Length: 200
Image (tube, rainbow, N blue to C red; front, top):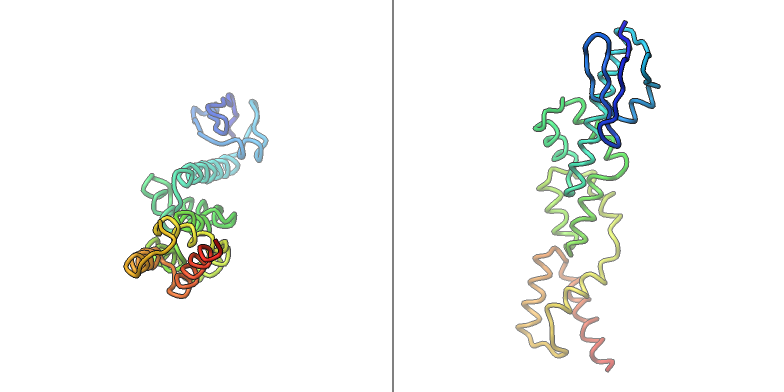
């Protein structure tokens, strides 16, 4: 048996638990509440093993949240990063799966690239590069907002006159194509651009 002799909060979501055996365990608020930890609580060796595993898993999830708070990542990238930071493969995969269930990884990558003004073609290329499985692409890409406004805004930035010449249109088209927009989308955007000026 081990008795909890001190439970100290070290950060808003983090705690340090000390036992009469001399063991110190870093844990989280979620684990403290799930296990009803309080000073004086006694745990069997099996309960202590379960607490150690739950604490490691919960700390890994917190680390994963901090990592994706700085940049969008795929499941594979996050799992690899967590393992690089010393997390066990099981905990790294658990944390990535947990965040994926909440649509905070692959979907976030799609939204990240869409916000950068990329078209579907370029987003697919980035998803492939980041190791996102193909079966996840369709679901994530269906969440994309309508891109007409985005392509129109990019085109307006490239074409500064109301009567662009052929070379200006070609350069603007090539720019949009490199950003991953399809030829049909580009033609439609140019037609909308020209229609807007013809109305005035």
